[in-house]
Image (cartoon, rainbow, N blue to C red):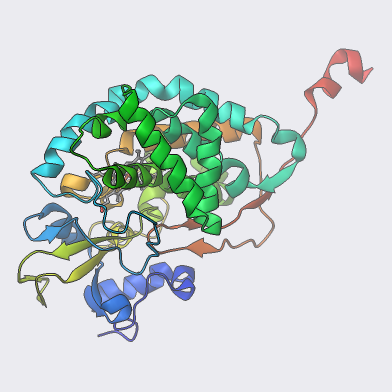
Length: 387
Ligand code: HEM
């Protein structure tokens, strides 16, 4: 066993700073490593094992206690979210109901609204000449997009965003949960044609379960895309020529490299083995999706940014029944955000020698991107004013 395996802690800031080194070591020396943290769990780091856990729902259940992450959600302690925490066959039926909202064609129809959202959120940024791109770009656009997808009324979308960011950055969860509960009630009273109504229209879904579903839907839709935006803007600042690649391929490569969904949990359903390691019923697994997507068994030169790879992002979108439902939306949205950032603040740059502070845990992202850019007032360049 490696030095780090027995006390591996995905939530330790020291792990975040060198996550890829730690995971590389685990893949090489102890691919199904038992950690004693948080009551004990195994962390699964190799591509092949991660794919097995994702696909084999008969042995590995998605109904899992989160490992170590704070779950202080008043009123939701025992709630079970439809879709996210279900296994087939229950999961299959809910997913079938939701699939039409997230198909490639359905998402393509959202493109003009997403572009409009991105433009209006970025309006006014250029003249400022600088700002933190995590705050000014990444946290502004994705919450507004998912709010629209979930049928939140336009005047309430910015409030949802503020409450989400307040909950995540300052732990202000009570107001946020109140907002989500109100949305569930509104949709029950007057269902719309959206992925929240599609779940809450089923009266057998208890309110706490519906609220947890909405909470996870907003997190899945916004927090992931916030982190992906930050990683994308960081990589682009280091190599602006990446912008020459087709958008979908570039997005997939960024998602593969810095998988925004870093880890999720599974519960072992029956005594079994995984890569030679014996597991008991009830054991908890931490599935390190972003470790699988850096496994050199599948991705030669895995640490390099190569948007022309044939394999795409692979496990960074998950595997099996729970593979990302929103991947078409995420790809489209990130491409639009990139286009609009490049139009609004072309040539943005980060300070010389800047190294981002990375997060790792459930999600992988960047805390701050203090950028500057040059700006010329178009009015001052017009013939009438330049005389
Ligand atoms: C770059 C952005 C994104 C990444 C990297 C990502 C990644 C993932 C991964 C790895 C999973 C599987 C988790 C597991 O099996 O435990 C997942 C599931 C899911 N994702 Fe995404 N996701 C992204 C964006 C989105 C967006 C924009 C949505 C829109 C709502 C979304 C909705 C979902 C849903 C609903 C699930 C659960 C599916 C199920 O349980 O059947 N994701 N995602």
